[in-house]
Image 1: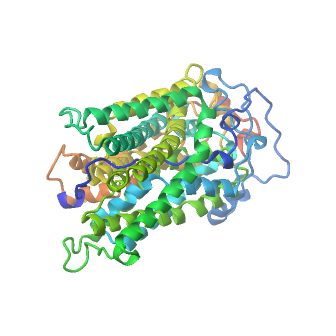
Image 2 (image 1 turned 135 degrees about the horizontal axis):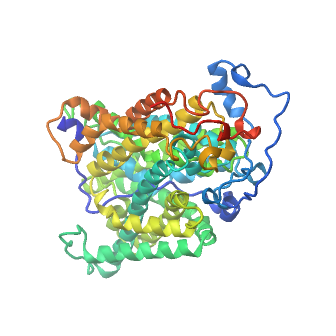
Image 3 (image 1 turned 90 degrees about the horizontal axis):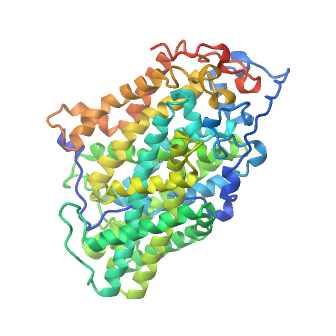
Length: 586
């Protein structure tokens, strides 16, 4: 059991990076205020087309439904008579005239996401775990090919109805219950915000070390785990981000404009340095797999492979949940599907090659695998190259972190009280929570980064995305009532019992239970469990999705609006007023 749950500790002195999804460069994206703003004045629902087919016959057999769903028209419209406490300018459906993202935009979006410090760190961690470069690339490619499926599927309702994730979650968790998955995703994003802030602070600290010749080095504070200079650098970088958030989205747009080319240039320079210093690609890629015959980990490959695949899925678990926040601006379903398919698996594998190759080169150059790019830059010679590289890394981290790890949790906090919490206030709350999480502890080792953080939070988010997707595709058959999404009480079929869908609550609880013992064993709370619990935890995301989906579909029989098919309820003015507001048959 312990062998299956434990992974080698990282020997690098400082933690690595965070999986912050990279923001879309401003040149390839409309102005943020344009994206977030949409009118929400009441308007009458359009009349249904008399020639439009309806019911199961219109959709045809299941395989045809699956392929045909990507031809679904965009039906976003402002809700009629929305409850003022459930809507503001950020949460109104994005109508067709506000859509600006096409295939190229989404492909570029994903390319900029995967070219990040934490993608490098995740890839480099595989070398530290014993994989050869080609084993690592195949592991990452396979994991992200799997990730593409929920990413594309969960993007569908955002594109069709133009709603952000917190509003979409109202259909499955209830008008009030939607705060549960939204805040669960927000807490994870706050953790990533903190981790990225730690990276930026580490860059500042390494620059000071280079400039002062190590004079700022100090002993760690016992109860904190880091030194006072490191803490001050972290707090300084944190304060700079808060200042930008308070100034608004336009300042973020200006910073993002330069982040992508800086990071691309830094990546290419890093590869060039590794090739020339290690003596070419031959020595760089000569590090053998530790799982081969006669090697230290002979026969243990699969016990590392599956946790690594789950970690790669968990790497994008947050974004696969709130991808509607981005696809609500897609011009069509085809644009979001093709763009994501082009940008995610292939470019994730390509950038993984860079991380694996450079990390393998550090074994040749320094005699050990250095998986932390900040520490690697700190070992380079020459004051100017070190400072320039670290400043570029810090700058790219700054722009990435604010755009990727503030928007989603800020929306989640806004969903708690749209009338009172602004986007800016939600962003500040995100930053405070990220600070309180002490992120340096989350990535202090490969074991903590992969087993505790990535797999641990995927165990929670797996059941959530399983519930959201099964509700939309199976229970609702891709038909949502826009008016009910913005209504309370008897006027909404998503009100359930007091605004909470008990079927979703039971499903998420049952979905987490199989992997909970393995998680508790990993963090040292319990020991001596049967090996099966370790195996389930290694597949936490997959187990959570499967179990929660099955349980949810069973419990939702008899719920208002469930398994009814027919035409889009939001296109004929249907609301929950004629349906019993009770919960599912639990």
